[in-house]
Image (tube, rainbow, N blue to C red; front, side, top):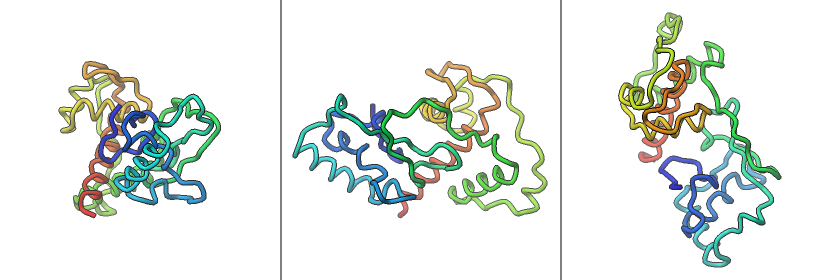
Length: 199
């Protein structure tokens, strides 16, 4: 359980015994602020979390009565859109599959991802000529896809968990029809991490 840079702090990736992370999930999506789950930088939220830990110790998960549900449908990144606090833990539901979007929305998501990477955005004519997505094999091993995309197997597995693709190890096989969604999510996360480093 380690909070990696660029990740949204949740109970699943924050260490309840680490003063910087124990209370961090409770500071996501502050009530009353719509559309901004992180109104303050994570580094400052870690300072607040440390103060809460020093004041009252680690949170008692047995007494927890509200849980944060990250946005799932229609949002590219939970870091940029508001989720909700509910009286039950979130269910393991698949994230957004870009292939479920219309062709126009898929083109827009890809254009924004390329823009975030600093690559030139394709022209309108270029988008109009793209008629079919790349062909992927029926199934593909995580380590092979990671190598093909230029990422680590761990990165691919993390995205698989986010979008509901079952994958536990680098040798796991995943459906080929989810490869484009995994690729796009990896590009978006990498671009957001680079942007965060610049600003």
